[in-house]
Image (cartoon, rainbow, N blue to C red; front, side, top):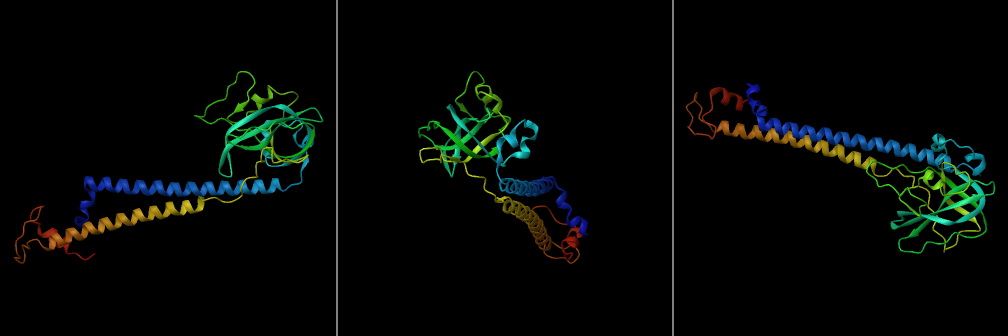
Length: 280
């Protein structure tokens, strides 16, 4: 009897409802697991940055000389020291933001005492402000090693013809073509310099924020949403069962000669009545 009680669940509209509900549940669970994967990646990133950024600074010649581009990732966030003079020509890395303010970063090449050239991100300039000129004289520089950005699918490319003075991303191969000396496959975020950075200079880029972000809370939310959808499915099935049971109880009982009432689906059979009155 109980089989016929649930037979309506195999009707086309109900099957479509099942597919929609369980498809949504699978998607939400996948999104929750994806957020947990991002949380793990964020924790790994925080561990790497914390370990490397706390190491004592080393001379750039010791860390970067003859560096294989394939090994550059292993040195990112390490701090290095170097000294030299700034080249006057600068490149603006536009469409940047810092502390919620839109602006640009200023890339300046430092010709070091050993004759190599290192691209240094001197820092942030608010949108619309004048780009400060490269300072004159010899400077001692402390910087964080950074790896260049790669163009992602769908992103615009920078002009490859001739020297550039504005870029969307740092492409060291492109910049090296317009700079003297050997350029290592990494650049530096300026931390501090001597003579010191003045208020007229770009604002140095701060280190990354080492928190876990919202990934755990997002994952929990997706799992809660999935549970709510499943609970809604159960309630919908139970409500439909109760509605059908009430309709069956009010229908004529051929065995007892109860009052005859015509339902929208026609008079129920004795099997229908029996199944409708079976306890859940």
